[in-house]
Length: 344
Image (cartoon, rainbow, N blue to C red):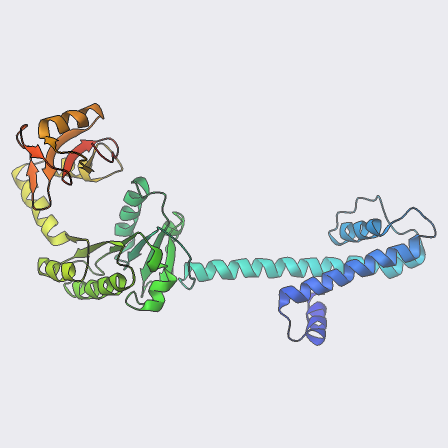
């Protein structure tokens, strides 16, 4: 049946797309069934209307068969009933198969990173370092203040987005993250944040790639907040010049963790608890609106359920400062608390 329909469609409509062909053919069957039903049955039932004819045709094509209207004449049964059942059901079945194939193709393209996205105020993650690391990062982002934002992954060599990431509604764009075409597909111009990960942990060549990606992103969107991961601390200055907002050196952090765990066994658990949004208390930087002593700022934080442990100025970090230390507008207080507060 489907082969007959396909042959008929190809012979009659050569250029129109398949959805248009289906629309025309289904419309033709509806018109034929409605007018044919009236032609043969109106003499037996003068109260029939054109709407009744269309109702009968739709009910027959969808195999619902309510039985409120049906042909009673021989002509109505053979010249209307049978054709509507055969061609109508065949057309609807073919239409459903086309719709299903279209949806499957679209989903496959999205999983393989072939789609383009029109997003705004979203987070773009560049480079795929491995499933475990990206899953951990994704969980932290989703549970944090930016958890409501869409997240797009951009990578050149990943063939298909892992199911674990797709379940978290992560989008995927496959392509060279240095190229404008790839960045456009990820809507980098309207993104709020970009996280550039090291392609290979421990490989300093990843830093060179990340510098190129940073230049490409900053050249298109100067307002974006960019955080870059590096292997070699010597790359930090170059990334600052490229316009990067924040640089994280994993090698340096790893050395700190190892030495502190050696000198203070168990300190790693404390640091992980402070840095992770998945459990316990978290560490925040809170903006200060007016110049006042640190003791007063600490008391204001305490009223909001936060513990003030230091100050972050534009030049340095001061931990456990004197209560009389003057904190200026523009500085940020370092706090530990259950949730983010904006200002004190």
